[in-house]
Image 1 (tube, rainbow, N blue to C red):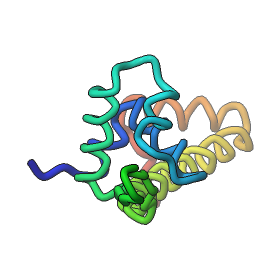
Image 2: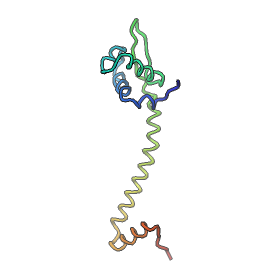
Image 3: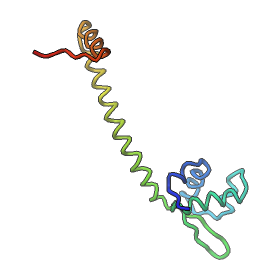
Image 4: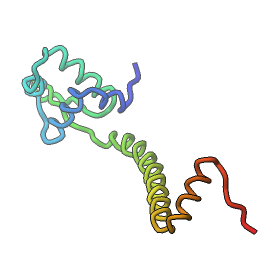
Length: 125
């Protein structure tokens, strides 16, 4: 089954595993020792993280060590960035609008809000 990085970070246990091995390479038993779930459950999480390319397993003697490959998280960062730009533009427009209505005289404010509410615009001559 082909998995992507979004599947990997969807689970809080997998996010914590990534956090653990981002700081140092750990063997599977050390990773499992940080959680209150079974070793097979941790192995399944490790398998998913490996399939997504967020970690690699390196054998050293009889031990298997997990190492983080965090460059795959750039996909998430890129995806989030597009929405960050979208919402920044929307919030900037809202800020501008609020500033405009705060600086209008009282009568003009009421008229502008009334026209906005009813979908009417003043015609310019």
